[in-house]
Structures are given as C-alpha cells and as structure tokens.
Length: 205
Ligand SMILES: [Zn+2]
Image 1 (spheres, rainbow, N blue to C red):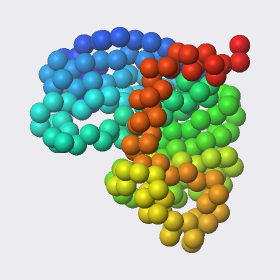
Image 2: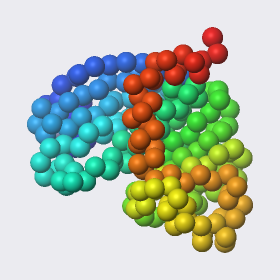
Image 3: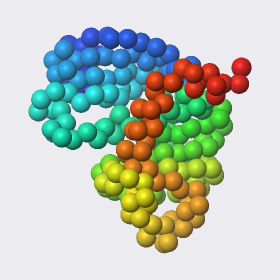
C-alpha cells in the first residue's frame, strides 16, 4: 500500500470497517513518513484510495487553509449517502462513457442514480455543470448537486452559477443545488457523531 500524499510505502493500518450498502471494505491508513491519512476502499470489483487528511509539512495544507481536499469532500458525500440509506458510488461513468461523475446516489444497486454530485474546487464550474447536465440527460437524475470552493456559502455560490443557468444549462436549473464546501463539510461533521443512529433510522429493516 502506497501513501497517496508522499508515495511512501511505510504506512500503518489504523482501523477497518465495512460500508455494506456500497459493498466496500474500508481500511484507514496512517503514513509513517509524512503523517498523511488515507482510506483504501475495495469491493464490487473495484478499489481506490481517498486522502483523508493532508500530510504535514510541505506537502500539507498551507497554514490557515482549512478547506478539505476534493478527495475528502468526495469521501464525505459517499459516507453521507451511506448513512442516509443510498447506494453511493464514486467516479461513475455515464452510460455512454463520456463523463464520470464524482459521486452518485442510487436507491438500489442496478438502478439509475437519483442524485449526482460534482465537487468543483478548481473553479471550472462550466465543466462541472456540463457533467451534471449530461448526468441528467442520461439518467434523468432527480437532483444534481454542485459543490464549489471559491464561494464558501451557498447563496454566493448560486449567484456565481446563475448566469450560466440562463444559457445552455437552463434545462437543469430546477434540479440543481449549489453548496459551498463549508455547507457540505458542516453537515457531514454534525451528522458524523450520529452516523450509526442515522443509518439505522434510514434503513428499512
Ligand atoms: Zn505519506
């Protein structure tokens, strides 16, 4: 296992757990070289690694910067979906293979996604909107969510994308929600401590 922060193989398994709905087994690692943390997900014939915590020092976050990385926000969306009883998937290709969506939530395995999420931290809002619009065209998703970085609060974020929704993206306007990363991260942090109870309440058994 290689640390995604620094490339070192000097990593330590910290804990592991299952995400039954997604069908993933998750192992949380700490890197002894750089102090970075990451999760390894395996299941459904796929595996991938998501960074949990930036490494210390040069490779880490600049001082004063508290925004989670793209990987961290993706991980939070996967966990939120799981807690709420959805089958959450990462980097799902659209049926025509044209785009991959950061995260999708389905009501059941094999069904078309009900919700699609794009985490756009690099300011390329147009590309993210194009992926979401395509997800709507392909899957008729009920909800499309754009998580943006440069405007921390949802209202300001919405103002940012509004001009684009009058033009070529008008067809997705009524389904699109825009969140600042702080809104998503705040929700995740607040629910995390209640995750077990939430997952039980969301379950139908
Ligand atoms: Zn490392």
